[in-house]
Length: 216
Image 1 (cartoon, rainbow, N blue to C red):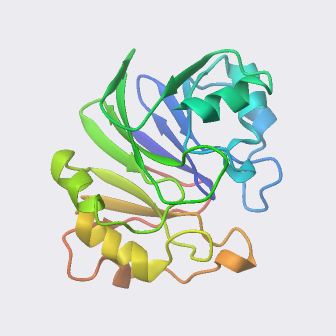
Image 2: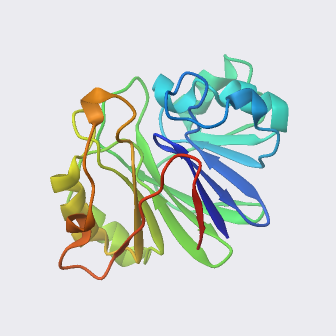
Image 3: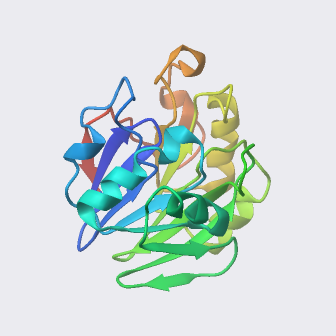
C-alpha cells in the first residue's frame, strides 16, 4: 500500500483503490501537483468543509468520477458546488463501501458543519486521519477499539494541535506509525518536528515532504 503526502492535510492512499483525504492543491504553496492534474481516484474523503480541505474536491471529482464521502452537511455543501457522487455519513459505527470500511470520529474544531476524523479499514490496515482537531481524551478509546497501523495527525498549532498536544495524542492513540500533517504550509503553522514527538512511545515517526511517499 502506497502512502503519498500531497501536502498540508492532503494524503493519498493507494492499493486496489485510490483514496484521497482533504486534497488542497491549487492555491497551496507547498503542493507539487495541481488539482486539475489528478486524473485517478476512487474515493475522496472530506473531514470538514474549510476551504483548505475541500476547495479542490469538485474539480478532482469531475476529472476522476470519484465518490465523495463525509459528514452529511459537508457533502451536502459539496453537492451545491457540483459534486454529484456523494455519500453522507455521521460519527459512529462502520460505513461499508466497496473495498473499504470507514468510521468517522469526533474532532474538535470550528466550522459550519460537524468536523470529523476518519478511520479507514483498507487491505488489512487501519489508518486514522484526525482531520483538524485539538487533542481530546477519547483518542485513547479510539486507539483501544481500533488498533492503528498509521495515524495522520496535525501538528501545526494555532488552528489545530501543536507538537506538545500531538505528542499527547500519540501517547493516547498508540499508533504503530505517525505522519505529521497540517504544518509549515504558511507562517502561522511553522513547526520544527523531530523524534521528540514520539519520545517514550513505541510509535515510529515518518516525516514526509510534500510529494513524498512510503510503503505501508
